[in-house]
Picture (spheres, rainbow, N blue to C red):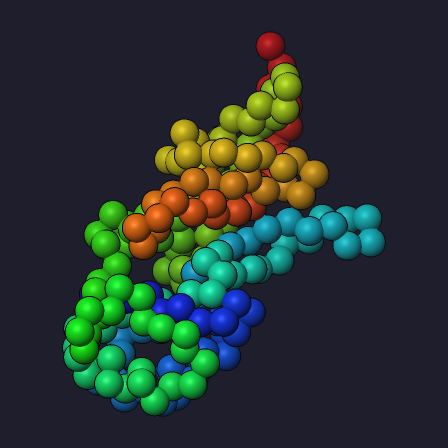
Length: 172
């Protein structure tokens, strides 16, 4: 089962490292931070960079939620275990889990989506993880080579920024 832990924004890697070191291996199958590829311009050329996709969140997979919860109490830098009820916490919903899996690879990294740009800066997704989420795109920033996708996550609407690569223009 998948769980989400809220931490301080910018501290995701440190928190995940602490969890991996401090939590007993039999309580924890995996601890990860979903990331996204993005293009950034440095000294006049576009370069791929990696950034945290869900800022302020660390994901864990465990089949022993009670034991995991007790272990996590000892880890500093945790804000709270999301969805906690009584002494346990709730799993990430199946729909949300499928979304995270569908946009990322085995390392939980979301690659760039290839787009064609048409009239009025309309984009057409040609390939990549955005292909199945075109209707969820709420903002396009061609200058920054990213789009914002609206998704429901942990019971609220959230805009996730995802990287795009412009493959050309759509000529009519």
